[in-house]
Image (cartoon, rainbow, N blue to C red):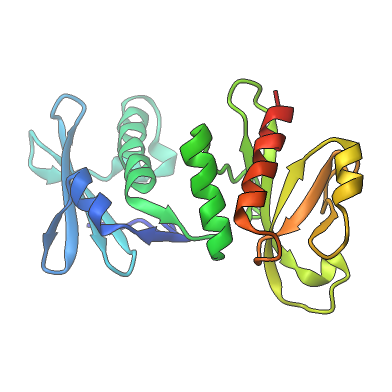
Length: 222
């Protein structure tokens, strides 16, 4: 079997979801088998509790290990089709069996659950160079209504280099002007300060209040 590097970086295993997906526990590792492309290949995925992941493709006709899909320079035509099907299985496992761990604060996790449960929206990580920056967008308009990221408190002229998770939300210029106090509500970090503002997700603003402000931001993203 071959290890898949960095595939589940910043992810946390959810063992209950593993079992529901179809993984079986054998000798302290989880195994999942699936047949691909009309049973031409048997794919086995092995995941250890340290988040290391290994895969193997077996050509059913020859009963030999198939590796051409792993050679980037060979990916065209049929081999590209095999690689695409193989990758889709891995992506489904990542989505359905792991929790994202890029954000650590309990407030942030509660907010992520809130937008997922109420609006059915997931975080989108759009920038490879900013892995701890995520946007949430409204499906019917494709417009952002929240941005979550991790920055230093000093960016808000607070006397601390502590990293803090923040959320940028949309509101009317009049309401933003009323909210900004540079203690609980701040001018938007890295966004249009007339239409956006920032809240630190460290408990300075209670969750129920943030939920209401998210709802306002969502409505404005029509």
